[in-house]
Each structure stands twice: as structure tokens, then as C-alpha cells.
Length: 370
Image (cartoon, rainbow, N blue to C red; front, side):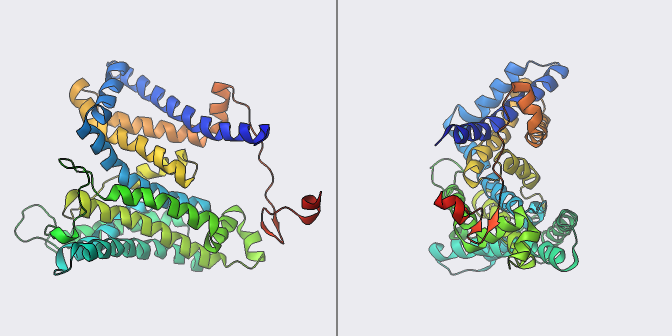
């Protein structure tokens, strides 16, 4: 690895790190304006997220959906698409998984759990493919269609569990019947809520990386993301790729919903994983859409979410502080020149991207011969 590669690598690592530090600094300013001590607030936040076994396992539980949702957003970014409909896709995944989880009886757990998870992925895939089809066929912008479908999904869920066909008639609170034991994700740490979804999240990271970086579909995704016009000229079906990407992105979000229902809540309610999908946009931005970088990014946001309640209990600082930190991180990630200016980082120019006869970014024969 030469000096230029090292500088580029350090830039990719330092920019997200400094963005997080600036986000925490912005949160500290908000705490001071609220009349509290930032050291006390962040100390309680750390304590609530890490200092006991139960706190750490709860942080991991909160991290799991962020991994799936962060990957969902990231794979859309790689194709130049902004999937802001993760919440709706998550809800559809929860609906499909819950239906299989409480309605399909008589299956052993080794069959029931995978079937319910696959049902959740199918629900998310179908809901994600809709805006992909609309964009491919009509040019409708995916940001608009996915936002609108979020509302449709929320309304559909509310109808189904509130005196609808999936409602539990024996409960006053709108929800489905409890998941059957054979469909519940096994607990991997006794005495905690940490479930098998952690291993699924860890497995999803290399699977998505391999899909994007080492497969034909992944090549098409990257080509369309870099230059859709050039990709079309080289024979790639841009419309098909858009539908595929949005479907895969939706499947990952649907898997997050399925894991939350089968592993955490045990029932489906209208408030399933409220707001998580929008936080996941920050997770993907902070990770630079790199699947492996999604893990530490998701862990950070999981820790913030897990420790927020304890921070409020100990210091009376509202959990809204976490939203301030997340928003500030997004601002600084989206403005790398500002971060470089504050910390006096040198910009590292990237090499031009070419599409040649050898493939995307391949070295021309004359350069290779030299």
C-alpha cells in the first residue's frame, strides 16, 4: 500500500470519526443550553449502554435492526437510489412475519423460524419493489413514492391489528396474538433479551458485501450508481437494476421488522420499531455505504438509543438529545469539506472512474502493459 492509499484510507476513517465527535460536541452545547452538565449526561449515557451485562446486551439488541436497515439504505445508495421507505418496508416485513409466526402452527422451530423470517423478507421485498417499478416505468422519484408508501404501510398495519383480521380479540391494546414458541428467535444470552438475530445481522454484512462487490448483480448496481447513462450504453438494463435494488433493499428492511417481531416484542403492534428506519439513514451515511463499516456505525447508534433512557433518568436530560447528536452527525457527514476545514485535514483526490472493455474501472491494456 503506497502513501496515496494510506492517505485515502486515513481520510475515510477520520472523516466519520470526526463527524461523530462534532455531533457529540453539538449535543453538549444543547445540554448546556438546557442547564445541565454535558459530562454528567454523557457519563450516564455511557453507563446506561455499557457498564453492566444487561446494559451491554440491550445495546446489542438495539444494534441489530440498525444493521439490517443500514445495509438496506446503503445498497440503495450504491445504485444512486435514496430508499427513504425503510419504515414502511419494515412494517410489511413485520406483518408477513407475524402472520406466519402466530397463524402457521405445527411446524418445528428449525423450520418455523426460517419460514417466518423469509416471509418478512418477502413482505419487505414486495413493498420495496413498488417504488422501483414506478421509477423504472414512469420516472417517479423514489424519495416521494417511498415516503408515501410509509404512510400506506402504517395505515395498513393499524387497520390489521386494530379490530382487523390480525387483531387479538382478547386484548384491549391493538396487537396481534403472541407468536408461537416455535417461531420465536432463541435467546443466546440467558437472562437477557439478546436473541439469534445478532448472528443473522453479523452474517448479513459479508453477504451484502459479496453481493455488491463480487457478483454480476453487484457490478450492475455499482455501474448504475456511478453513471446510469454509461451503464445503459454498455448494455445494462437500468430499469431492471433499479427494481432489483429496491427489492433487495426492501427485503433487508423487512428482515429487520421480522427480527423485531419474532425476537423482541413477540407481538405485532402499530408502534413497531418506530423511527428506526430514519435513524438508519444516518447509519448508512456515517458508514459511507460500506457494508463492513455499517457494524460500528450501527453499534454507535444502538448504544445511543440504549443508554438514552438511563441518561434521562439520572440527569433529567431529555432523550431528544440523541436526536440532536444524530442530526448533527448527518450534517457533518454530508459536509466533509467543513470537517476537513475544522480539523485541517488534507483532501485526497480520487482517481477517475472509467468503463472500459474490461469492465468498470478496469485498467486499459496499454496501461497494464506499461
